[in-house]
Amino acid sequence: MFNSESISNLKFAVSANIISELDTDTLLTSISSSFVDTLGIGVTKMSVPTKITAGATVTISNNFIFNLDYFFQPWSDYKLNEIKSVNLKDAHKVSIGFEYRPTMALGMSYWEQIMLRFGLSYEESQYTYFGRDINQYSVFGGFSLPLSYENTIDIGIEYSVRGTTEANLLQENFIRLNLGLSFGDIWFQRYEK
Image 1 (cartoon, rainbow, N blue to C red):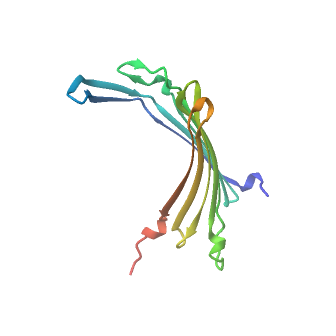
Image 2: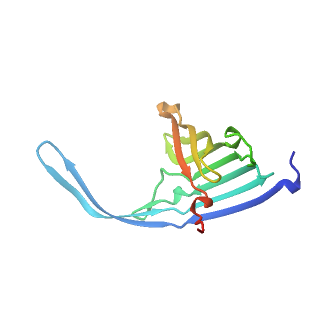
Image 3: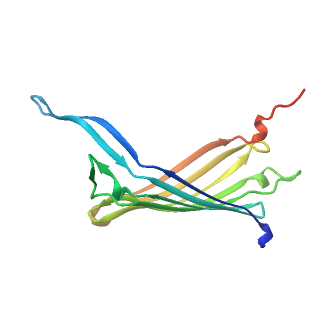
């Protein structure tokens, strides 16, 4: 089914967002039934850590696309007013995905032109509560309905589980629906009269 000649378009990418320094004006107040008291006014300085993302994509037989992505952000380096947070840990996320794109040919039915997608991800967030890590597992799938040769309506669904019920913590189960439009290059070509 697959041989070395059928593998094409092996691509790698890396991106990084450098440390962001943010200054905010802060007003801290206390409100009671009889008065409002200003407890503090000042400038808060935050240092948001560098974010690094890397990915790889390989196309096989022009129909199968496999993706692998990795995300890292060292939240253990986060600073608020030059003080490191002891409650945050480094965040990691790994995602894998698969896409099937049919080879377009004249005479194909509409249903034979649909592109299919599937993926999984695992994320270790920067949060820890009562010694328990808050992680997220996701599974997602979707398809693209052709409007014309290069234009599609993209529909996707994701199911995720975040958190844990250990130590009386909260676990979230949620579903996310996505709807998008993709416009290919042919849409924007100008025709001569």
